[in-house]
Structure formats: C-alpha cells, structure tokens
Length: 313
Image 1 (cartoon, one colour):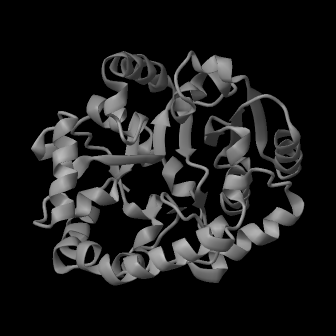
Image 2: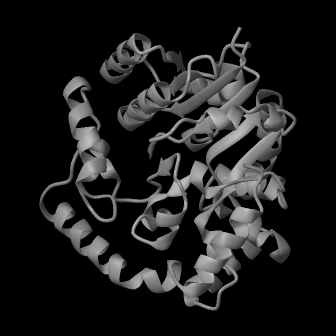
C-alpha cells in the first residue's frame, strides 16, 4: 500500500491551475514512488465534477471536503487539514500550492535518506536579500521582526508553497496555529506561512530552491544556475493570465491548451484583457528594469550560492 502522496488543498475556484499541476506531477513522478491527490474544500459544482473526471482518468485521487471541516479558519489554511481529509494510508506528504508547474520528477523528495525528517521546506526568496542594505531589504527585515522571528533566523524563513512533511505532525501544527490566530491573525501578511515560521522558527530542514522556485526570478542568474524541478507562480499576474514576462508564451500556452478540456469558469483564472492586461504589461516591463538591482545583484547571487550549500536536498 502506497504511503507517499503529493497533494493539493484548494477550493473550486483554484481547481483549474491545481489540476494542471497535479497532471504534470503524475506524468513526471513514477507511480511506485507516490500517489497524487487533490483535496477540494468546496461543495460539488461544474468545476469539481470536471476536475474529478480529469483527475481520476489520469490516476489522481480527487477528494471533496465541505468547507465546514475547516473549523472556522480561512480557506488559506486548508492545507493544515490534509491529515483529516486524506486516506489514512498516506504517512509521508509533499504539499504543493496550485499556482505551480512541475517540469521534473519529485521522486527524490521521497528518498530513503529523508525518511526521518518531520518537516522540510525551501527558503522564501525574501531571505536572499533580507540582510542586504536596500530599502526593500529593510522593509522585509522589519516585517520579520514584527513576527517576533529572531534576526538570526531571518535567512531561514521558508515558503510554505511546497512542504515535505509527515502526516503525523499536521495536527499539532494546526493546534498551535489556531492558538496564534486567536491572538494575532490580522498581523499575518502570508497567512499560515507566517504562522508556521513562528512555530518552526530556526527550522534546520531546508530544501533547495529548485523544489520551490519563485518564478519572478526566472529572468535572472538564479534560474540559469538552479535546475528548477518545480516552478511557483506566487504573485500576480499568473501565467494563466497571459504570456507576460518573465515566463512568456511557453508557460501561458500550457493553460490555454488545458482550458479546452476544463470549464475554467472562475474569472480569476481567465486570461486578462483590456486595461488590466495593459496594466500588467507595463508593470512587468517596469519590474524587469528595476528588480535586477534588488534580486540579481552581487549580494543576492552570493547569498543564493551560500544558501544552496546549506540544504538537505
């Protein structure tokens, strides 16, 4: 019986990109390595039925769960309920956000050498510059300090968009986060990512950026030098919105093709048109001129090399 599972936690509005990501995982990752499952926290509708049909025809488990099972916490925290939603056979999980593309196998994340780690994640891109001397770096540092994360742990702040974890730890994490939410929910810009970093502050179990590559860095040396296994489109615009920089036509076309077999009824995952499209074209062009000075300078390049040495996988 398979104990490993790559899983997603979404509502019906995000099923379009999440289903595509799951199909890529299933096609790249050997079936004897891990199952793939989409957990949809929503009532049945056109999107859930279509996603279920597509998933099951490709060997992906599709599980519907009422949002009432989230015990009153926002949908953004749904991944903290995967232990309740997934079949009990799954002991070792790799959680993935739905706004991802997976060009390479995730098989190595289930390697025997990783079996004793309860939790692993990759550093957030903010850690590349948090100790630099730019205005943005100082803003990030102030935010980490507002979370009461020690300065010595700022470069260990991880991104929760991809997490390798044992199912057995989720319940304890959920309980601790619910306590935090009662005290300071409004203080979290990045929802459970912030809460997890507070709880697991100083986490030593860090993965390479290649397992959670932030795609706004695709135009820079980081992308040329890190063999990305998983691409995380973690800010707007997303690749299903259009062929914007830095990903271009190739990563947009994947969604265009998939839309032919998926209803894609949610307006948030439709290609942009009109003034919104013009706005993002101008925005991405502006960022391509400004951001290299922040994200691809000598400091951030050296920091990325240093951080990549300090990873488990």
